[in-house]
Length: 418
View 1 (cartoon, rainbow, N blue to C red):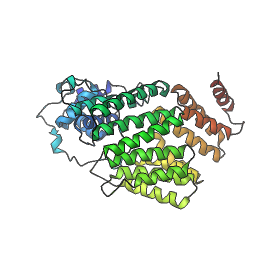
View 2: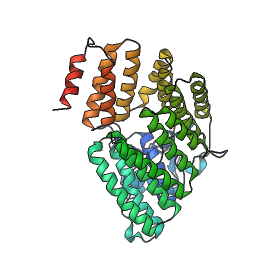
View 3: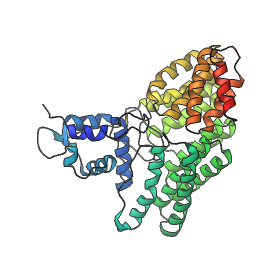
View 4: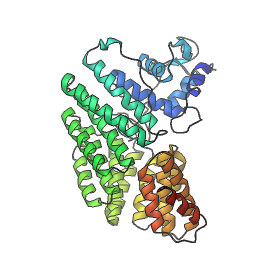
């Protein structure tokens, strides 16, 4: 029997989860962080998951590959392999003994740099030239994404904007390369996301368009597809499904036979939401079938920026939104029930609750809708998310006055003006 690696488990549990404050880092979060760190430091796309971390912690694998060991040291902020309980020999096997082609049975798609990552150690004098400079510029983006789950956009957005200005100067003057422009695209995409969360639609659109231009300069077709689709989905969320669908169609043109299933599943899910918003039942259901087919398809080839899992549970959230738009309330509720247990970060969970509350209003279950709206608004206020606040405000305008928490909800909305 393998000897458990208690040192690795203790190191993981000493780091706080970015999505569940007060709780330790989960195996899945560590796996995503390691994948991101490996890509940042080596350019390699890897796809380890919670199962891999479990094997390391159980001692089944005592000596992972060098790039994994280096990534874990950086993520968990430890100095040596021994501090993590890694050693050669023993009853455990090595990473090379494991089938490395085991990739996400349900594909992923959180997008460029969406994984948790710790700040990498400062690059000594940037001795490696342009690659080290790109890594140094890209590093803070991962930290901002990590903080996004627990820091108000009101404070984080200005920092991201400042970092974008610095990155533009560095890339245009020093690193006019594919990696340099990919980094710029990712930073601009983050700035767009934060602007959208703050309710600054003009800045959000501008930054999304910047991210697309930089992605085009990087000549990374997958990155162009991702950023274009992100803008398209934003347009749908803003009430412009026809314009959004045009952008989603454009994003699809950058996909080909080599596109990973993750990208196809995610884009098909976005298209389903757009078609649902337009009331096109046939196209919505067709897009949902495409999304499910690609989500279920096993793949062994991960490609950045789709290197994290787009599971069936994550696809279910888009399915819930699309079906609700078509008036299929029972189907929407079933999909929501499948999705909600997997959403742990406060802001995404709050947005999901508002979407489900909207469904409850349509089903004349306003007590439940009101309760969910109160919970979501508390998160929106705490994290300075105007996006959440606006959705709750819109929801309230379509509700009656007799629900159980109506007075509490109204008081919370009034307090926004005090």
